[in-house]
Length: 456
Ligand code: C2O
Ligand code: CU
Figure 1 (cartoon, rainbow, N blue to C red):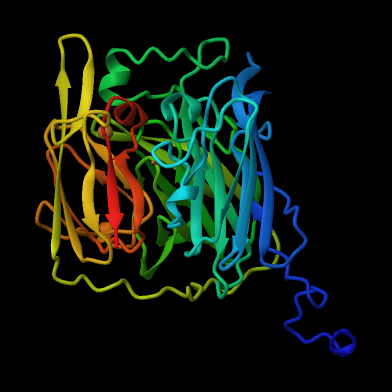
Figure 2 (cartoon, rainbow, N blue to C red):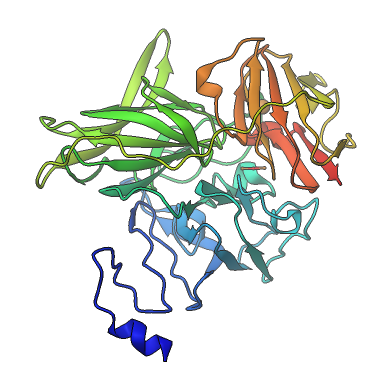
């Protein structure tokens, strides 16, 4: 009865086009192709991912053999609304074991995709990941086994949890930025884990944005509002991004919207980190560009990766209102962890350590859930480490005793520069076994990883 009545109600101005009992369609995001939702039930997103060997054409001399989710690099975009259950039926068609980790999502540890908690998914096996993301924002997924090779070979994808009350934008885009190390013939260079790779992590020689080495192009609306989500999926290289031909500001970091978005210059994106920008194309711009900037001695090299051509009638040119919650208060801390980041050499090989131990040597940390905690990270080698904690958000209390405004936000990844001391604040609200590690994948592989055992 009720259904018929609803169906007869004339469309209201806010009608989304969805029939009763159906959900409004998700925004159409420009970027890596979306995975289809295979479960018609509202509130459930079901996606099938298969990891297998595939081929892509990144360079003219290609093709390049890759390992990919559903044959594409980056893998399909997984999209959900806040509150949806996400079910990923995963099949491993590779020749080696793997897992999928959902970087930044504060879900149950059984679904976090780390071998410390789940059995590796062996070749030919299936595993069903199912979780309800508690936070909206921009996330990504990747293996958590031999990540330095599996991610570099192409296993990486994006995941968006849409805010229920996000303002409508003219375009929502996701840019996946990576650098890969290719041979002259376009193959992925072998994984030697020698000298420089051990020391710096593996730096690529080819910049990829959404799996393209060419400039990406599209139309943009002058004076319209766009949301640009950016993730750095490189093994090691810290990148910066810059926007031309537009006013732009930072609206979210590592998923969560910032209570106070800010305009800035060139913005740093360490590996693992996500940043969302709000971009308003200038009315008189000939083009709107996204550039990746890399330090080059005392100067910068800029690599244009996207160019938008103005088209259509002008928009109002006004910032949108983003539904951000205030940052949680920093309470007096009652628990303290100290992590000394260091390295050791046996004369030929390096290992990277936390408190003098590699991952396999160490026992991890026992911590109490729901307790305001200070994590003090001290870097001892003079090299940078993008520190990532699973399953929790943290805030930066101070960097070398000072507050850097670009550190504000609820984060899951923070860059610890050489010899820095960074103090983090978290309440460990999500009990379980959680990895904490350097996201330079070679450093993690060579030991710079530990576990936080968070108990009620
Ligand atoms: Cu993006 Cu432990 O990982
Ligand atoms: Cu590191």
